[in-house]
Amino acid sequence: MIATAWNNGKHNPSGAGYGLKLAPADRDAYFSKRWKSIILELPYRGHWVKVEINVAKKSFWDSRCRELINKDIGRWLIATRLAPWSKGRPPRIEIEPLGGRRFGVLGFAAR
Image 1 (tube, rainbow, N blue to C red):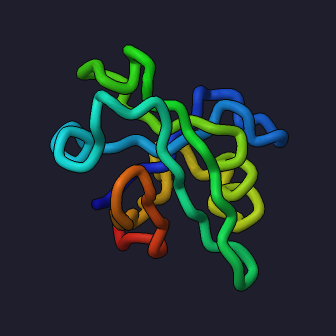
Image 2: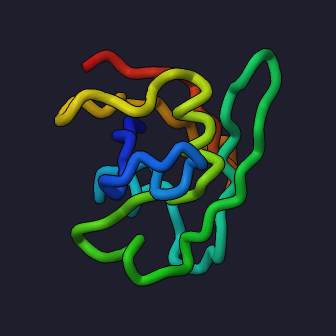
């Protein structure tokens, strides 16, 4: 699945306010409303950074939001120089379901 990097408009250097926005069809196909959280594995300098992300919130399941939000996603986007991005040009990230509540970032998707 392809996610789009998201920011709340503040581009905080701490990583706060960053996330990955999912398409509604991908969210509905690969995520469960029964889950409280998921684990997203981010590749960084030859190892995997595991980030637990809350998905038991109304905003994740409504028609407008759909973001996986966590400051560690923001830190990763900043560390990999994907953030901040030019206005209207957020990077696209390829995510693979790994089974159960686990997902892994495969890389960056072409625009």
